[in-house]
Image (cartoon, rainbow, N blue to C red; front, side):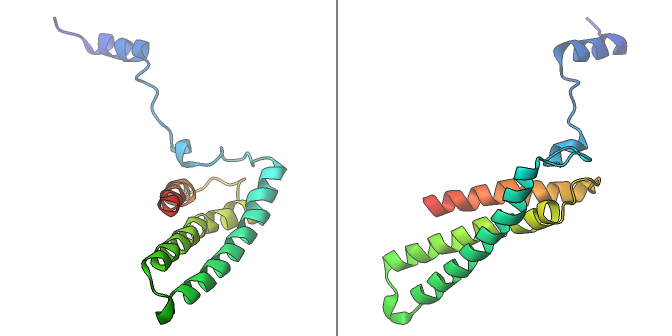
Length: 134
């Protein structure tokens, strides 16, 4: 049995396969619609402050744990946890600053920035957080 192009398109539409992803999938929210103000406060003010404080404190922990007389298997593990915690905060930091602190949510972003935002704000922190708790 041969299917004509018209029948193929109707099969695709009927099966729901035609729901193609758009470029908006990389956006944290639709362009022109900023998130609620409480989200701007949490992600634009509180999150960067927490990231800065945790980066400074984890750096101090790393300096202490790298002392020659403190080198042991347990301290190396604690050093790795401090490193992964720092990376968990540092990767979403540019996205928090660009989008939420400077409120660049009204503009259409280039597609590449949407991809950068998704990877640095969701994917890499998830990976580093998982490494930190293992």
